[in-house]
Length: 164
Image (cartoon, rainbow, N blue to C red; front, side, top):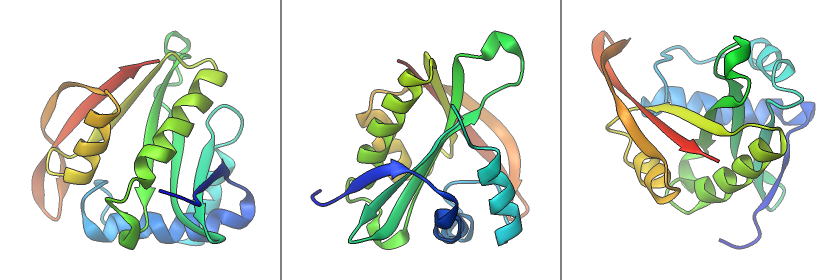
């Protein structure tokens, strides 16, 4: 995909990050969250994602079309080198390679921040996510059966990992 820029997010990006995240919540394919979030929630989240827990945005024609983040996996010191990841793509740009571009950049960011492993949690029915993670050589660790509740129904969650 051409003309896609990747950069670290800045505070002015929070509103667009929130919009894209809320699309993921509404579409029920990427998170167990059911209620959309507000600006205060996302602004607090963004403040917690500085330093090595970076947020990257993908831009096309000065519009943010996706974002990714390195999230704390655990606050225990034994897991200092392990990060969890999030990737959300604006609806109309899903399935067009934006996730691959963001994930490559996020992996490089992780290496530069002394992470040696990335883990992620995804729904087994998230076709876009499964395609992306498999293409990027993430290994399926297993499935937590009935790990959470989504729209009143028990939902399985798959865990995947990649050693950097």
